[in-house]
Image (cartoon, rainbow, N blue to C red):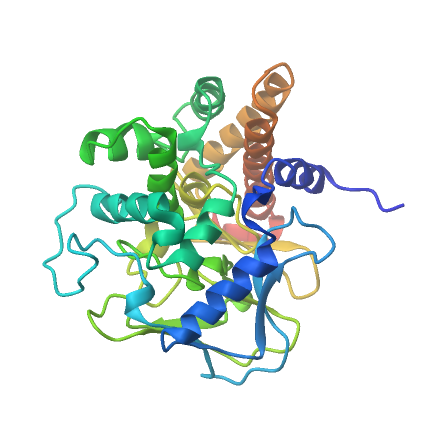
Length: 371
C-alpha cells in the first residue's frame, strides 16, 4: 500500500470538507450546461479540451481543465462572449456604463450583481454559471474562517518570529473590504458571494469557464488571454505553447502578461490568503529581506533561485524555520474546525520547507565568496 506524505494527508483531509452540495445535480451536468450555454451565446469551446475532476474516481478532487488531444501553439482554447460575464456595471451589466470607482481590490458592484444573479438562480440570464457557483462549496478563504481559526492562523504568523510573517491582513476581505468599503451585509450568503468575486474574478469581471483553470507557473503555464478588460470584444484564451494530450491547462495569478509587477509583490503567501491554497511548485516567496523562487530541478528534487544571500536574510530565514517548527508543535493542541486546521498545517509545512531549502542553498559551501 502506498503511504501518503504529510502534505498528501492534509490535502485529502481538506478536500473531504469541500464536497459540492448535491442539490443541483452532478458536476458533469454543470460543466456540460455551461459549455452548451457558452456556445449558444456565440462562444467557442475547443473540442480537444475537457473540464473534469482531477481524479475521475474521486468526486472530492478539484476541477481542472485538460487537453484530450494535442493542441498547437496559439490554438484557441475557448472564447467567452461578454454577455456571459458578470461585471461591475450597475445597469443590467450594460458594458458601456461608466465604471464605478472602487476603494478596494474587491469590486463592490460586481459582488452586488453576483448576489442578485445568485438569488434569481433559475431566473437569471446566466443560469448555468450561477447554478454551478451555487453548487460549489462555500468559500474556504481565511477571511471566512471561524473566529478561533483566524486567531490560530494569526498567532502562527505573529508569535513565533521577530516580525509577523505574510500574508498580512489575511482576514481583510470580509471585515474590511466587504463590510466597510462596500457597506455589505453580514448575511452569510452575501459574504460568500463577495468571496467568490475575490477568488474567481479578473479585477472586476467574472468569466465563466476561465475561472475553472487552476494556477501554476513555470513550465506548466500554458495559456494566454486577450480582451479581458475590453468593453465589447469577447474574451479569448489561447495556448501559449504546444500542449500535449493529457496535460492540465493552467493560468497564472501572478506571472501572466497582464499581471503587471505582481510577480514582485505577490507570491505563495498572498495566493494562500486570496485563493485559499498553497500553490504547487514552482513557488514564489517574498519573506522580509528574502526573495526567492523554489523550482523543480531537471534531475528531480527542488532548487532555490534567490535574488541574493546575505547575513541579514539568512538570519531572518533561520528565524522563520525555527519559529514555524515551534508553531507546528503548538498547533497539535489547538481545537478548531478540521478544514481550517488542515489549511494552516499545509501553510506551516510550506513555510518550513521553503526556509529549509533557502538555508541549505545559502549555506552551500560551493557558493564561496558570494555571501
